Image 1 (cartoon, rainbow, N blue to C red):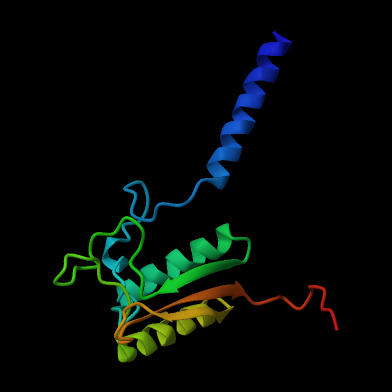
Image 2: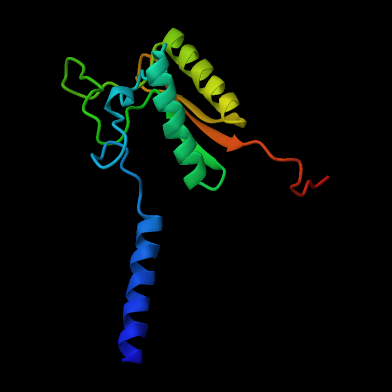
Length: 151
């Protein structure tokens, strides 16, 4: 009887560990519907509802990342089919300069709403003509002033 309880407990621990480390599918049907914000241009002038949904999504990412998350600008959500295609049938990725700047401004605004900082990690052109940009940003919750600071 004791060995059955120990086995059941170990199995429960193992499955909990797997659940905690599994990647989050933001387009899954068991949570909020993120399909309206899944395009590469989702951060370009979002409606107030879209802004709130993006904020909730980034808040979730930051919480799951223990205070930080990497967010990609100009890249559609994984599993999204709303990115569109070019004339060759390839997915469209990246944003024109004006869209890119608007997206970065929106991301910075969301970060401020979440009491977080937004730091660019990588910035690149998504096409050979260098007209469409993507970037990765680190969104990190701002400290409470109680963390260790090294000099």
